[in-house]
Image (tube, rainbow, N blue to C red; front, side):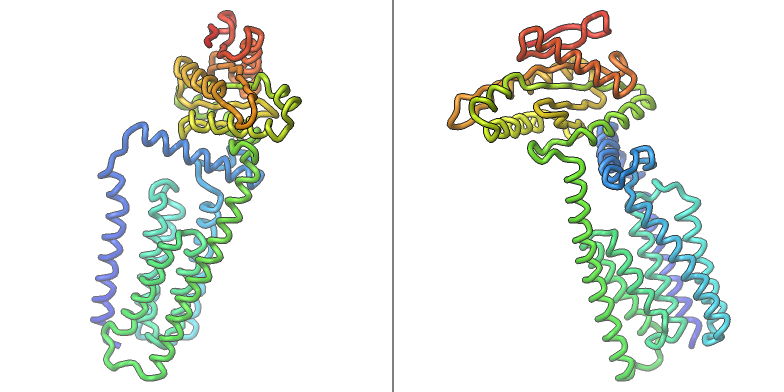
Length: 412
């Protein structure tokens, strides 16, 4: 086959991929985010990492940099598949000798692919590309597949299978919209490979082969999307069952302790402290005895709503026990913690259960890291002590530890 059209297509493909990479790498540099936005994103990543760790039965420290386990598994699979494909393809091309005219170009193409895998998956830090890695890898992989098909017989090329491999694999980790875009790009790349520089039109057999191949590609993308969507639903359900209290919708005790440990580690690195609230309902037993546990559960749900409406997105609110609640307040000083605690206390005091005259109040203890404790156990003990200071002071109030413990005051 003529060399000039292939070289032209290769140059265009390389330029297109360089443009994609430039857009991916320059965008974060051109768009500088503020400090608060970066902190919020970091906190969101930490929360996702803890959720993944909880479901997987891991400790949060096992996850590096807030990366999710599915992403690490994806990197490992892509690395293995890429190297096996490159080595197997090189061996087959060399042993069979089917494409001797283009053999050198095929080897160069596979060598470039190997260099790309080495740089992206082994040399570059994992956070350099972030989610944009999917875009870059997809673009390069589709370009590789297109050029291989051109160099190995077009519609008769056995390398068509690379297109469904790319689309089907990506469908398991990217969104349905991205999968559709990737399937469309793969189909377009395949058609370009068949028509670019072709001397003669496709025969009837060739048209049938191309039609069946494209149909298979589209159907595989659909199957991958549906399967990935169901897997995500199952994963989300598992995360919710293992991290969320079903009655109040707040996080559970296990999740909260993991969040505190990660916040202690982050505070140790950044030098910024945080606060912790422990809250206890004062009259829930009386409500249960007088109206029954059904009404008591409604009260607990109402308290959960008050707490959830009062905290920030970066805060972690959890049900600690039967009628006890806790809130982790990252990068918050004592003054801000007291303000939030008082807001929650007043909101709970205003709760009412339709059809009853049931009323409840809340005693709140406030502690600060590192003044009131350097470990999660120390902080929880200190918070418990502060809460009982509130109860002994007359209930329905906010309290901290006494001055001799490094904290002061009772509010409410």
